[in-house]
Image (cartoon, rainbow, N blue to C red; front, side, top):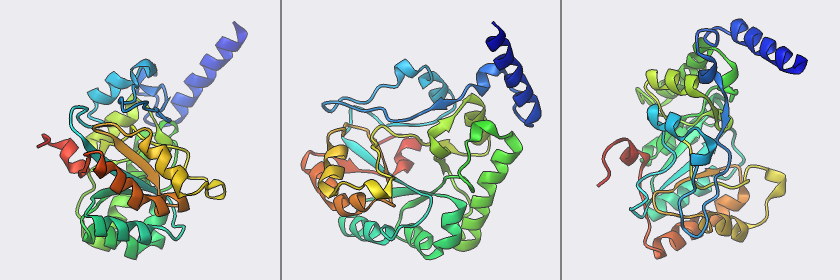
Length: 261
């Protein structure tokens, strides 16, 4: 009982210390980690057992498209550059595949030409926050600042007036962060296909990346990849080719914020 009381007291102190937390109900501040929801044998990954599917839907967030249509949505998280994004963009351009790149402030500041190329070649540049914080631990004002700094930097660089899509840093969220970011005009984008690809010292070869993605593929999948991965850069052409052989089409995230055709 003492431990429960101490934990409760610490939670109250945390909420009162961070502006934007104290005003929210305790349930709105409960943090969720989206993590990896593996799909098996072509069946969509289920997140129902996690207890937050209704929260995601309530606040207009997405993690997959229509499971009755063989459409795929390719997304990349770009926190920093590891020398592979140009090669990935080359393949996407050659194959005519749209993608979404979620960029941090560091990426915009250090790789302006790549950001401009992404937009020039028809891809979405989404917001991944300025400094990649766990947004459930910061106040509403700081969340707005994190996102606005990226938006302003991208606008200054490219002239793009708004950013519509957000990937929550680390896949951590709660009801409050979904509500605040939606009020700022963002659609939170999660995923239904992913694997542990971001550790640059633990790359296992392009065939491994291909197997990891293809074994989870399902209609309506939102695919999360990290462009720092050598495996992903070398496998992306094969992923596209194999998916198309199975009858899949790659679509833009824009289709998920409007009726699919």
